[in-house]
Image (cartoon, rainbow, N blue to C red; front, top):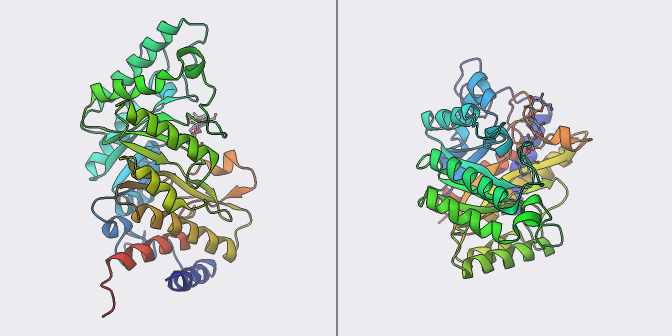
Length: 359
Ligand code: G3I
């Protein structure tokens, strides 16, 4: 099995590196030349019970034809990369600006895509007007108001929420944050209950990074989810961000996801990208493609995997370059919207699953 994907990916690497592959070739949507592209798209091959998503920049979604055409052809779900973060939604106390988040939801709905809400409670993107000098009750009521207001607004239009994001430190203990310092550890259970009251049908996730494979942090997350579930807190799923490097695979990703599923929760790959130490090479493109395929396999191997989301699908709109100097090319399409071998590896894995087994 591994051989077949390596063969496929090596051929894709050769075609990609030799530039044989034009914009949109073997990719979805319609190439500028109007030529229909070959083959089924990712969303066509994904099992019906698992959504394939991408983090999106709403402005590009609205204004860039190639960005939109590739996005709506390959993905049946979207996550707002930044538009639904608290600091962006509520730039001033008491004043919400829903323009950017409404735009993402409206575009997604008009293209038959589900929306994954990101994120309600986080140590980052906290509005600048909110101060640690406030009393515990003032902070708690501001947080409660934000969770309820945001979830209620998108009730029935957002299928799942990252209720709490990145709550753990690297040692698996709760991360030091304004919320932990001022509200104590109960802020997590509170946030889930507030979100559940505001939309009882929304799937509610705890989301974190560095937990995709077996690690102290993953063990800490496992313990946290088990405790919250034992307290009857409405935690429905666990999101594994998966911001990976092309030469480093998570340890035992499939068995790690499986143990979480055994707690009775869904799992989801929520923010997958595989950054390459520049310059790009055939070997690094191969490693990247096999890691994308590896994470998809892990999701497909767990019956409660709900979604598989990439954090940006084109190198033209990816956070990596600005956050990891010397790294880049982390997405399945390059900055010219040419599909990369990573996309071939995902297609190969999906085709392998739907292809009838040889008699
Ligand atoms: O929109 C402003 C622009 O007007 C201004 O000129 C520019 C210069 O400062 O900043 C722009 O805002 C930036 C925004 O991305 C949009 O590009 C923010 O400074 C920048 O901090 C923000 O970075 C985002 C980061 O989260 C912080 O919120 C990244 O795009 C986004 O990919 C990243 O995503 C996070 C997930 O939410 C959680 N998991 C990790 C992941 C990667 O860090």
